[in-house]
Length: 199
Length: 114
Image (cartoon, rainbow over the protein chains, first blue to last red):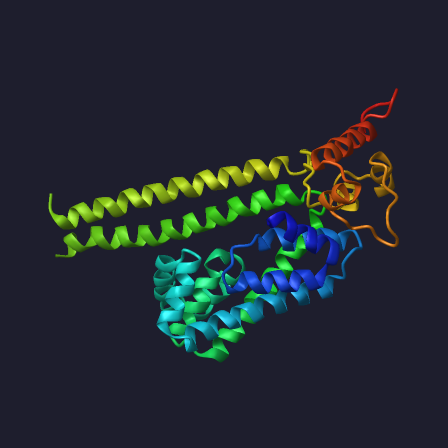
């Protein structure tokens, strides 16, 4: 299926990009980073307008994110659980709810582009946690436009090395995620080791 | 060993695993970045002929010619899979032909490699 989506973006350009990123933002696991890199490469080849590409990718993602937020906020816990279960994300949804509460705006921003696999869960979780919609919209627009601009620009710069760049970004995301976990655990460890001394 | 120390040990082990993961993925990133400009981009069925031509710094018509396709005007952005279907030919055959044309362009007869 990924091949067909990539071929669709390659052949139909911005409208296909818009539709696919909107579906992905609701929670369907699709290779959005690769699609944005491909769009960047197509811009470099003169086959796509850069402003159209960024607008289509940004608008599609924001639309999908807003749909996710709306489901979380007005769909009720049963619908949210069902959707989470459909994509096998029930456990990560609960974790995301806690993260949405703890991280707030910066958390929404960073899960739009840097830790994007968490994005759909954070959308639903922000809705169920009743995070203020105007703030969610602000961080969502900022994050999605950042993501579209960053990945499309990278694709444009490395337009002849699309697959290699995608592999680098995949590992980079894991490296950042592991580093964040290490920082969190390191903090926990220091707190735990200090406690007996204090007592 | 008390329950508190057992938990602290678990957190410590998880911390070590997370640090190891960070270094492992950072090393992979570094290695891939070093080779990003030298390794050849593989051909995939979703790619269009102009896309493949761009990745290998060749004019698209060289590759269209190699697979015996008259490109549609103004821009033929059909994927390799779609062209194979239109021509009623297997996708791997078309990919092999494209790869041969790329290799031939990289090493012209009697000349030095590109």
